[in-house]
Amino acid sequence: EYWGDDFLQDYPNAGLEENFCRKPMPAIFDGAWCFTTTGGRDWKDCNVPMCNPCECMPSCDSPNLENCGCPSFLQSEECCEEDDATCKCAYLKDACRISLEKGSEDFCDDAEVACYE
Image (cartoon, rainbow, N blue to C red):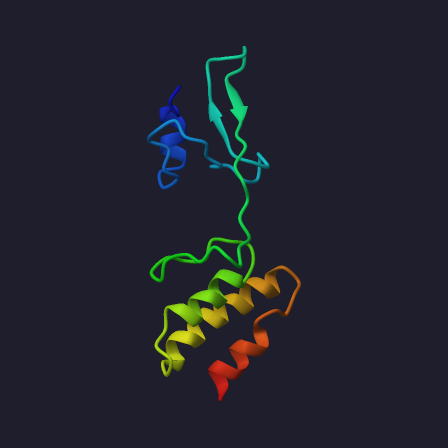
């Protein structure tokens, strides 16, 4: 069964056009789920394997949507030219900011070195 119009309107950028497993409401559901008409329920949990965020780098033009700084750190290494300090600084500041929001200082030393030398 497809996602209803109310979900499509409430979450326009969640990719809900088809009936695939999604997690449009992370604050309410712990994992991905989809609508179904089987088993007497309207929805079912989906078994979606989790990836290590330090191994899952977003494309260079995509923001880091993970809850840790690893993807931004990887982007600083892979998406910037070796001598482009401005590019590296932007990714590393993002990695540090995300880490600080999670109560850690991971990647902040890297950002300080890249941005303030």
